Image (cartoon, rainbow, N blue to C red; front, side, top):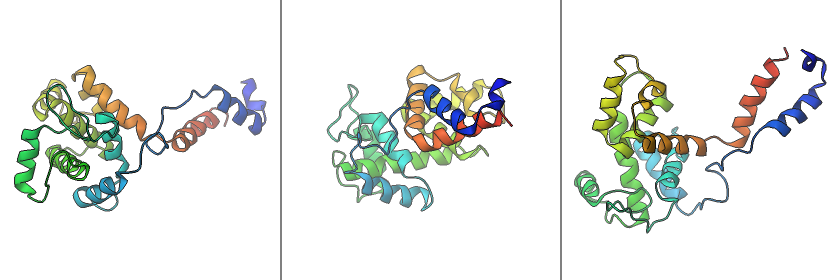
Length: 200
């Protein structure tokens, strides 16, 4: 290939010119950091100190664009778009969660619920795939995702196979969370490695 003879600096410039603009990642200033302390605290509490709390901030963006007064037509409320009945169930196990409309307790309840769903998926999947199943369950309901898993007719199913049997809204929801977690630097470095491997 002729590209093999181009200097590395030219390849880098070519890469930057042809790389499409990335979706705004969760770290950009577009998204408020007002609630970050809550995402950090409850991510650590329910998923451990090494789990990336930004997954749940990304989920909050996908749910409500981090708007604490958001309300859906079916009655889901707050940043994490939780139904009052779901919050009541969560509150039974967490009586300190005082109010659904309070951003702190809304975020805490959302992450607690994520943890409950995450625990239901005990297959030895890569952690991101297991998390995608939890997010899908949060959006579409655990029962519907379980049916999608059964439709793969595989014991060693993957997220790619499961999502083919999920509603387009749920696939879009998980895709948005995943894209928000893809920082420009991480995306570029992985794509750049792939590009350079073509010329080795």
